[in-house]
Image 1 (cartoon, rainbow, N blue to C red):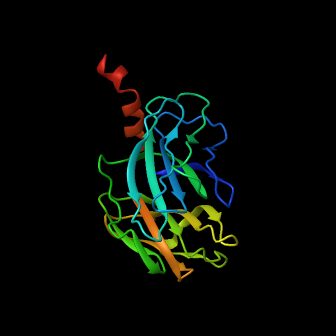
Image 2: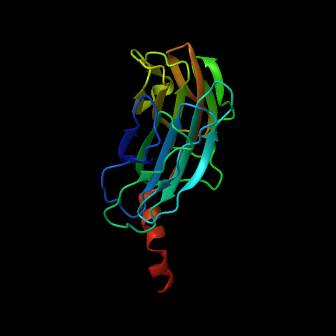
Length: 229
């Protein structure tokens, strides 16, 4: 099963701005998969795009349903060869907004060319959607924007998900952004979301991170060497 090395959270000023967001410096291992989850307070205001470490970041899913809703998106970048010390920087959003990001580092992981994601991306009440996973021992990683800006105190996640970021703008009604991940031991329909707060105007996107056994990841990293033998 993929193993989380660590995650990093960053957010803008709560009343909104056009700032870039960055992680602290870190040195990823060869074979890691870096996941960047980003959100803004407005469905019509796209987040920036990530860069760093000379890696290729691919957008995997986006929820931007329009109307009175938020915006959230997920990028991934494989680390074929460690670039050494690096940071991940998210460029400025399309306009001034409350925005945030979480960067995750996963070992023993891979991402399908078209990863499984949720088809229901917006609704009212308690956020809930399904992702039909394709592999065993996967991770589901996801983001939610609550445009109703409900107080996140007492928040509860479905499917024993683990929170790894919270952008709390409820006092200034600037939206609330939730970031979390969960395990999926078997392939099939999996539920992502929250049971509380249950009066949200929510937008959500999530993807499947596949299991890649350690020996496979290592061999992939050194494939050019093996092929030369």
